[in-house]
Amino acid sequence: MILATLQLYASAISDTAKAVLRAPFVWLMLIFMPIAITALAVLVSPLGMIGGFVVGFAAVYLYGAYLYAVGQSIECSGPLGISIIRDSMGEHVWDVMHVAFLHWIVSLVFGLGGLPSMVPVLFSVVVFILFNPWPEVIHSEHTSGAMDILVQAFRFMSSNGPEWVFPHLLLVGLGVGLSMIPGGLSPEVGLGAGVLLHPIMVFRGVLYRKLASGNRRARAWLSRS
Image (cartoon, rainbow, N blue to C red; front, side):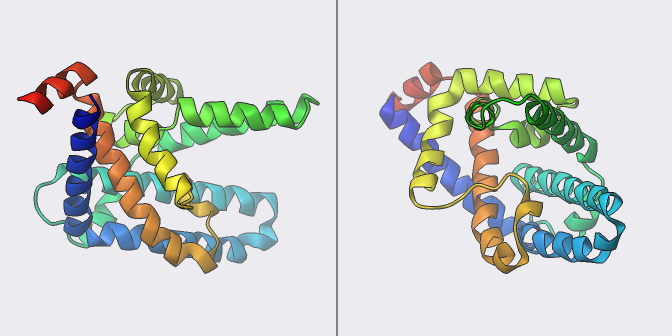
């Protein structure tokens, strides 16, 4: 079982390198997204709350486009040119919006509940673990609706939790932070974070597809053949 899992990771790393190299403009897309969102935030800051909604929608819009581009870089066999940026605009925007809106509602409820500060923190950690692959569900399964996305993510974690979590723990141990919303990055670290985060997001997508297409018993059998 251990050998099969190590072979799975090795195959995922190889496929990740190929996907990243065939779509360099997707990499640039993530690198410059935080800078563009921060520039927009400065521009609309005089609008107050309305400006905040504008920035939030822009972040969701661009992140949805990025997820689509990541999915295409994994699925396509040929190189992807700069047109992938144009083609990705508007894709998955409502899928990401549904998840972001649900997250906002839950945060609002906890904020109004008067609970000890540790409760929302623990809840956030549990939710982050149980529904961690929700971006991959969006661009791999093409699932729509927040509840359907989260249910699919939970089912995946129930079946593949250890194999999914282990490489993430290694990344955290190496000090690589996983920011699920690129708009949260500051412009000062946007370039460096994007350089590191994009291969991780592609690896997640590749690994998700490999884990979702099989099971532990099948992988163990293949490793012995």
